[in-house]
Length: 116
Image (cartoon, rainbow, N blue to C red; front, side):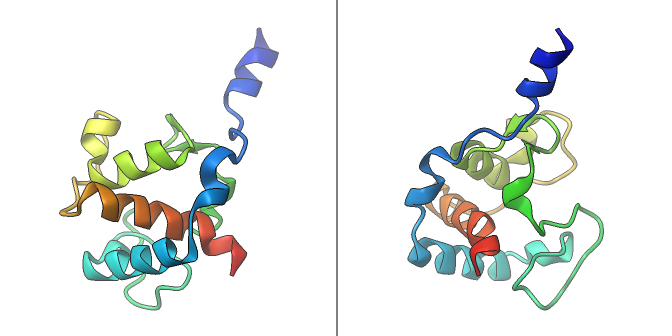
């Protein structure tokens, strides 16, 4: 049983992360800067601000679970970034004023940070 729990907590295979484009990542960076995600998070490639209220997003691609609860997939990440309280009830991250497409672009940026 412990083995199943351990395997269940591991990061899923990259699946469709490889289809995330550089253009989407650049748009995601612009969204991150526009809505000031750095006010709460340290985000590689974003020089200012570098908040400490939320976790650092450095090495995000290696995180097994989003907010300790959701499998780290592009769809889950986009949903969490856009409306964290709906994706994970009790989350302290507020819903963000971005579209679903912008949330997908933010996910592309966060997954692509390690490729830079």
